[in-house]
Image (cartoon, rainbow over all chains, first blue to last red; front, side, top):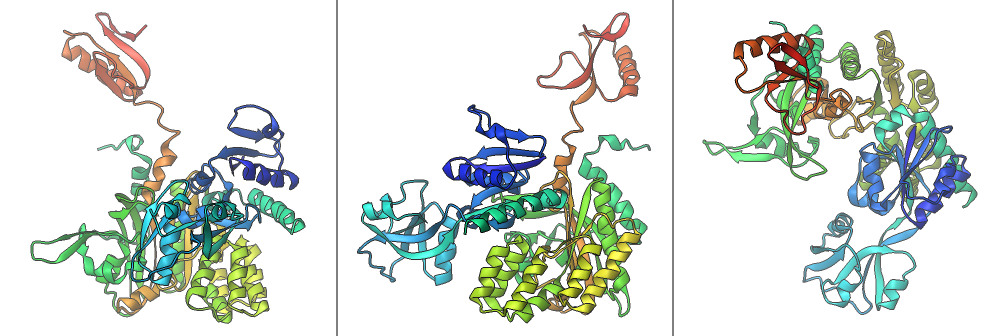
Length: 209
Length: 368
């Protein structure tokens, strides 16, 4: 049985549709109920929905053999996994944003509000800039408006939230998209099945680009 | 004295079996002190799996550390005579930072090192011992083998260095083809060489499948021959089906030069064995010769035990206040023929047992 962790929500449903189109369907997933996992015994597949930021943990710890997860989570937590395919979905950018008129006074420590402390720290280390991380779990955009931070490091999809709050992207750190990942031990023992999934999904990605 | 191995935890059983295995191949046990001068780790920080080290100041003012690694200590004290090889195994606790909790953890680790005039036989022997170690842990295992020389040659051909080389190595380790392409494109690498590296990153299979493809990719013939020779020895040792040649198995290139390998068992989500040839570490520590070895991460084997222990004792024997201790003692001994016995007046809360017996005036009976 191949265990597949998908991120709960709209993106996860789109990812599942790609699996389905590639020949890895699990009809039970369309039933209206509160079940958390769905099996297709004939194909040897078991899907389950988990919080998007938890997919990498399920895969790294072997509870799922493969999973679909945003590159932002992979960069932040650096799990020990194989990153087998860029699914070319859920595209966005990890950016530094600030008030439109922000002036970076390099004599001061830069205060950075973010959900992605590791990514932010790594980025500013590469620039040799001294920063103070302010870890937040949501409504990051509020931080510079209220003077809690100078800048934010966050995911920007369309930029609408930033614009509506008088903020602007100042630097792009890295492009983000959804990736197919695999547990390293599972890859050894379920190689044929995992490679078949990668091939099927790669064809789907290619057909859409 | 007869030893009931059934009472041992899986990792404890494995330790005894590993010691016996390594002893059979003439490896001597290396016993070391719990502490080591911090300087050894300070100079070789990149070699450590986790960065942090527990330190304290000794009575003479020296900065000491609870050892986070065994290999460095063995290399430091190794002095094989020219033309000779030192073969040692160990079973020690090491102290590392746990990635999940971020705090220090005591980890039981076993392993072996072969240092000095290491030849092709020594390399093959260490690989066979890694395979046999995995077999002792589980019936279902895989030994993934790679060669740092082949990977380094490919990266040299692409003229990748510095950050680009580091990124390319990361991508190889993650089987991350899409980012590997991007890294090479950004570095302006020649297309044919990139295609070869991409092909290498996707190789993962038996020696019969992979070796001909390495030749076709124009990999260093000496390294390919070495892999061929080692695969033949593993096949002769009955390990052909468990061997997988896979170039995502990478050690730190500042230490490893020849073969690198990892061992997996079904049911454990990460590699339980990790090792390779580390001549470069010897050079860094100013030692002549070559070296190869591996570590077995015994703490990871805990999970394999889960299906086995469904209860705390085979029998719970209930007795009442005033029961004759001599009668009770005889009853306990008699029941021990069928396994462990807990004699108590009341069953402890959450205690799990296979059967519940009671000592009555007429003898021992099943408790209704």
